[in-house]
Image (cartoon, rainbow, N blue to C red; front, side):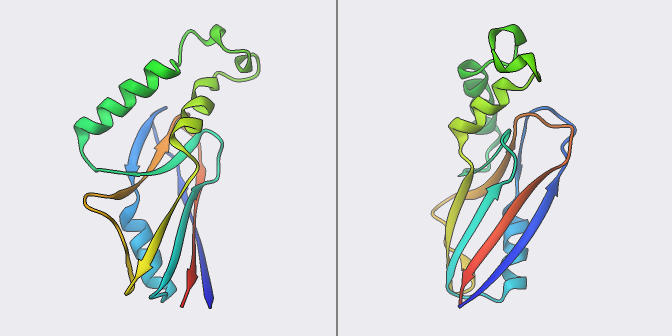
Length: 138
């Protein structure tokens, strides 16, 4: 059994954005040499997310609208957390979207279902954050 770890740095210019990181994960998988195993991808910041879904712009717009309806950014005064920062909505959005994904590795490839891709979800951007890719297998 072997393992491989790689960290991506993300610094997005917008407060909220979804980025397809599947190519980054596939590149890390090739570097790892793992043919059979598991791949964990997780956001290493409490106001960001990693999730699996379809890479379709209409869906991403719907997700943004839905998340903003659940936890609107403004008014900042609606959140107790915002006495320290103005990102309480980002914490709530991350709670809904999740911290991590696990994908099977089969025959040296990410074993996705139809249309599945891995995304980084940024909910409080404009600063550097990290995403960890961790693989175990043979």
